[in-house]
Image (tube, rainbow, N blue to C red; front, side, top):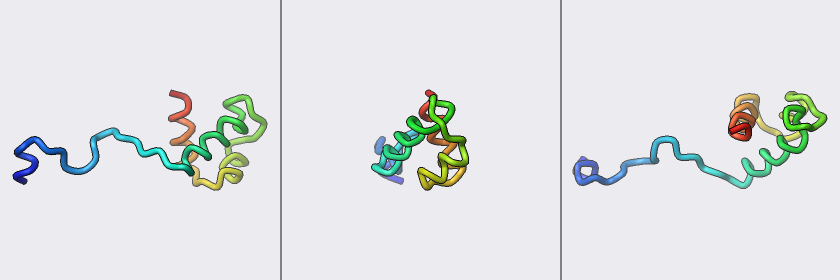
Length: 66
């Protein structure tokens, strides 16, 4: 409590993103193979190729569009 009162940040900054090696590799796979980015695979096939869940896949896809 005293740290917060002194202006210290407690925990992670709101909206901060963490980039991992796996997320970078997965995003490259999505960019290369997804139909939305001029690839040849559907979303389901791309999820299986990347080895990620549906929610993670669509989160990465949304980040790549921005």
